[in-house]
Structures are given as structure tokens and as C-alpha cells.
Image 1: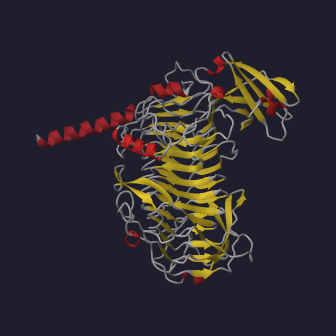
Image 2 (image 1 turned 180 degrees about the vertical axis):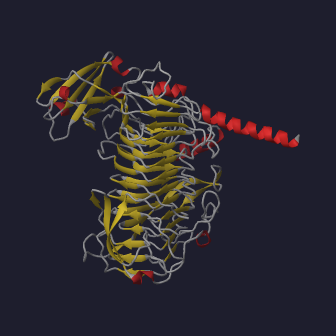
Image 3 (image 1 turned 60 degrees about the horizontal axis):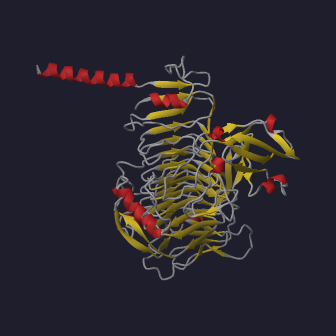
Length: 624
């Protein structure tokens, strides 16, 4: 009898599993479909919105080739990583989801200036041409800016400060200007040499492209789309952060292999829900953090743990990826992020390729960021963060660490811009990086929180004097590009009498770079002058690289948790999110390092000179 009961129970489990598999559905969407259909491959729905209403945890939505002028607004999410709701483009098919609508009926005013008059009903309840960009830490630079935009064949025009600037342009920039009254929106635009009625002209009509109205829509996958043209608002860390695509204070999203472009402010947001009004200053944000924990549910169980990988993100005027607290415990990997804040029409404090507040145990790995004001920016409580195997070039600043208390690991990165590091934090280990520009250390009177290890629980607050940093086995290249130019020190803004110790060991100095006074075992090859200028070729990005056998001396320690110890302020060990020890046993390409006498810098390569392809590269294993 016991055996029979066991057999019956096993059979019931198998039937239950088969039932769960059978219940998972794939809904198909096609521009030739009908929302009255049931959604099968032979009877597809017409809109993503209709499919979203039907999809349940475990289901998939496959969208077929075409342009979809609607917003993805999932009403529900999955229940676990194994029972998520997947939104995906059909393999091999180009699927565009856009926040813009086409506009025709343009009338010529004079020369290349045209105008069109649209009823406000064209935009429904949200008109981006009357929607001002404003908020905490935003600088309008003495003029108004709107979330509206006009596009000619996919490229956006620039908003002018006045109608006169459009009517009488003084340079080659294509401008537009909008005026909104109670009934109509009148747009003037400059279309050099073309008739806009014979081209594709579109205007922003939706605030976002894929973003749930409600927070807590968990375990969503968005894969393989072109997501573009959104009238996104300014997204500071103190308010609900709405991006062209965003997670809206949830858990477990996967955003992968998409092309994301033309967001007026932020491209991808991993940040806050609306938590009420908080003053845009230090005390206000500190209160908001406590509110996020006590009333907003900020914890590893509820928020974060997202994956953002393999995307190309461009033409965002605030940030490529940003997130206040909601990006904790996440992985941001193998993305290309470029052309961020290139217009510089407005200013502020939130512009960057990747800008995260509260990047607790977040891994930022294998990304290529170029053409940004700040490529990588960890601000407040980047405790347990790992920044590894990234390429940054042609940025105003490659890495900005602001008021974090550690521990954080920065390893195997290529920082190739003129300014590589601005460090207003402590408790960071810089390991096996290539710094080809200047480094600066600063001091700030701000007092900011630190956390209990691997959690969002505030353990205390501390001042932000410099110190408690470790520099092991890096390569520093003088940031002059001309051999024979005067010598450049690698570090500016000394660690003057730091309150916590600074360790510098096993570093190598080339291209005229000079060591910092605290360096205990510098290897000087200042007459070695590799170019290090990234070169774009049809198949990727290359640099010239030279290594010498002498660089293996003196012998260097393998960098491990045991070597790095604990951060002085938080007391937390340098370790992985699961508590396992750090061992930097691989290089930028994922190739193994030897235990001793390994090469400094990010490459474990044979001796010699080579043209080295540094992007794209295979998705490596990262720091072990």
C-alpha cells in the first residue's frame, strides 16, 4: 500500500508538471492581425496591448515584424524567474515600438521653414509639447525645454528657444519650436532641402514606450525590440523615474538584446516609484532612503535583481541607464551605451551612461560606454558593487564614485578617456585596470549612509574624507598623447594625510606617468608609448598594445578577499554577493591569470606588440 501511494503521488506530480507546461501559452502579435483573434500563430492579435491583457505568468508574447505605435504597459508580471512573462520580437524580424506618431500636412512658411497645426486631441491626455522638463538638480540654462520632439526619417531635430530662431536659422542645425493653446498645437520646423510631406516626419506622442503604470510588476522579459522615441521626463533620484523603458520599482526584469534610442531624458530606468515629494538636497534624499525601506519595501526580496544585457542604448539626453535604489542586486552587462547628453541644451547632475544610486551588490560588467559626460557613475551606497571588464573612451569622465563607503571592486577595466577617475568615495579596490588619463581624488563634507553587508538596511552614516582605497596591479599611462611632452602624474588631488590608509602596490607606469608617493613597488617603463587611441573598424574597436616580459617583475600577488580585507567604514568584507571570496583570476577577456608573476593591467597576454580588438568581445566569466 505504501508503494502504491508513492506511485500515485509521483504520478500526480508528473501530471501537475505537465499541466503547468501545457498551460503556458505563446500569444502572437502582427500588424495584419485582429485583437478579436485568440492570438495563435495563425490568428494573431494586432496590438501588444491586447496580448498583454491576456498573458499570464509563464506565457510569452511574440511580436512579428512591423512598426507598433503603442505603449507596452504590462498589467501583471510573472511570479518567479521560472514563470515570467516574456515579450519578445520574433527571431530574425525587425520589430519597432515607438512613442511617436507620423504627421503630414506641413505648409511652407519661408525657405526651409514649415508649419503644421494639430488639434490637441491628436495627443490625447498627454501633450509633450506643453510638458516642461524640470525637477531636482535640473538646470534649464535660462530657457524652457519640453519633452516633445520632431523627427525627420528617424533623426530628431533640436528644440529652439524661440520661434524667431526657427524662422531665421543662423547655423546648420535643424530646429523646431512649438506653441500650445487651449485647442491647438502649432509646430514650426526647419527641414533643410526637403519637403516634409514627402518624408517620414514624426512627433513625440507618448511619455514612454515600455513601462508599467503600477509598481511591483515583477519578472518581465523584454527581448529583441527596437524601442525608440519617447517624451520622457527628467528622472532625478528623488522621484518616480520614468524611462523610455523602465521597471517601475519591481523585481526580476530581463531587458536584453534591444536597440534603445531617442529618449528626451532617460533610456532605461531601474528606479523609484512615486514616494511623495522629497526636497532635492542631501537631507531630503537621506529621508527618502529610510522611507523607501520602511514604506516602499526596498529589500532584496522585493526590489531589484534585474538583468540588463546586450542592448545598444543611444541618443538619450539624460542617461542611458539610471536607477535610484531599484537597480540594487542587478547585473548590467555587455551593453553598448553611446551619444548620451550630446546636445548639452540643459544641465544638471544626473547625466551619464550608467548612473545608479544604491547599487548594492550590483555587477556592471563588459559594457562599452563612449560619447557620454560620465560613463559609469555610482552615487551613494554602491556597497558590494563590482565594476569589471568595461571599456570606456571618448567620455568627459570614465568613472565617478560619489560618497560611497565600500567595499566596491573595480577590476580589469579599460579607461581610455582624458579623465579616467573622479573618486569622492572610500573603500574601493582598483585592480588590474588600464588608466590612460588623469585620476582625481576629492573631499566632501557630506555625511551619507552605509549598509549592513548584502542588504538595504542602513547601518549608520559617515563623513566622506578620502582614504581606505587599494590600488593593485594597475597600469597607468601618462595622458599626453605625444611622446616627449612633459611628464604627467597619474594622480591629481592627493590623498593628503588620509584618515584611513591607502595601499598602492604592484602597479606599472608607462607613457611618462609618474607614481604617487605611497606606491611601494612601482615598475617604471615610462619610455613605452603605445598609442591607446581606440580605432573603430568595421568589425569592432581596436587599440595598439605592447607588453614586455620585464613587466612581470616584481612578482605580484593574486588579488583575493584575503588580500583586500574589509572596508574601513562599513566593516564589510570584499566578497561576492553570496558571501563567496573574490579571486581576480581572469582578465578583461576572461582568460586565466597565473597565481604569481602575472602581468599588471587588464590583459593576460603574450609578450609583444599587437592590434587588439577590445569590443565587442565574447561574454566572459568576470572576476571569479
